[in-house]
Length: 119
Image (cartoon, rainbow, N blue to C red):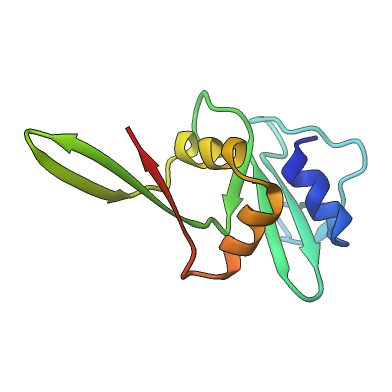
């Protein structure tokens, strides 16, 4: 379990899985993430709603799927600065590794907070 998942549980989120046919939530128990079954855990909280953490992009490790904070990636190309809004798993994992779970959690619900990544 990642530090971010542990933080969600410390806030009172319940680790659940969603039935793909009925969309009903049930406790995750010993369910593991797999492309053949459960691809994401749903962490549910009455106040904050649902946070999905799991498999999102092919060949990538589990990560925060939704909701995601604002991430901007700045690169220099041909003497021009390029600023892109990023939603790829690689950038989400960089943010999860560089920032505390609390910072990431707060930015998920405060759209004025932006993580800036530079090459």
